[in-house]
Length: 452
Ligand code: TYD
Ligand code: MG
Image (cartoon, rainbow, N blue to C red; front, top):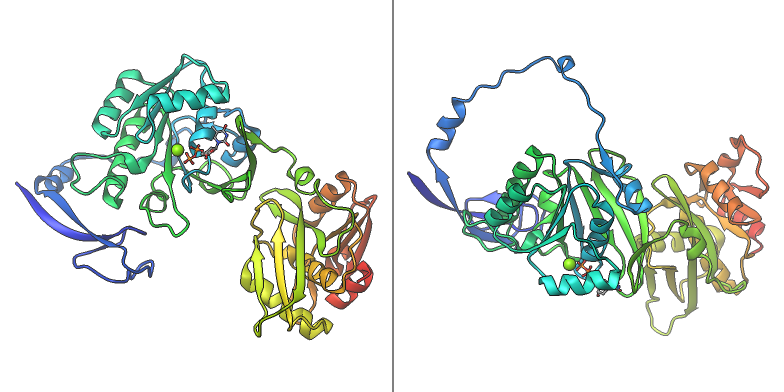
């Protein structure tokens, strides 16, 4: 006999509790608990205990190389670890309007060959998708569309069609009748993913699930699914900047450090194979406050322009604005500049911007931030052909950073002449470069060498 029970589930992380809580003890978010009815069938436990499955030595199994298919985008293939793995379950998360559906539709077109692609959408009608496909220049008989939100119907058509790739756009719009809570709730999203996984994994059908996440993570979904799927990708970017970054967050078939860069143009997503080229191409001739830094994203170095602006503050408390860099990091570096280089920024507003709407989390850009702020404050430009890299410590020392050789190669490739790097890195350099490489020990020495 079925027994009805009510539980409360955190919409953010999936934590379950028998009573309502204001604050989630697991993820510390407030007001995220929602009531949900669950139906327990008594027989389920007993039925399970009758099943037998005995363990065998691991060595008796044969490890098969996974079969991969290319997505048509080099950038995406690299993030996936070499292409979409056959039979894998991929979750693509991102804010609404960032370009998930567009990117996926473009992949559908490239993946078809032998086998069909099933595009299930609960968000848009066939006409809307067709208009998008026309705009993207996609005209393919092997892409099949299903406008449906009931998971049972979807599963049935997957079984009937046996496609090679299934797209679920988006997980928040799908529902299962077995669960009483609304579409998009944690239990719905989990149940649907489990069901799709069961159907697709047993048939070696590759599946891509699209999930929306808002900035404050309000909508349930992607976060609670991360442990269930093989690969989690997030598409990020500022909505009004055309660059998009695809980040691997979890990958059972490859590394998670890789990122892919795309640009949203009028014909959909276009990959950017050499990001440094684009990110520094619009640079003005020697303006003060601008500097080129090197950030490693996965295995690829990117040269990016940082801009700083300091101006006399009109209010009592000076303002610090950081765009693309952690605010606290900026505050810390300004404090180091004041104390260790004697640069009086106490009465100045400081604005910092990373060009292209990109977010940099790496400490190797510290020295660049310091140089850009100093350059703006003194109104002295940093030479245009100089790249600055190094982590800055609280005592003003310039600390060693990783993967220096790769960064230098990228700078050399793009025609830079001078690189300011930590002295400790310079000492261990093995290869010869055409660059003028200057090692510095602390920020005072760095500023002198840059000419600030
Ligand atoms: P979409 O893929 O619908 O986003 P998501 O599925 O993540 O919600 O894309 C949304 C935006 O992309 C939309 O505002 C318009 C823009 N866009 C382009 O700039 N060029 C294009 O070719 C397409 C198809 C969309
Ligand atoms: Mg969409």
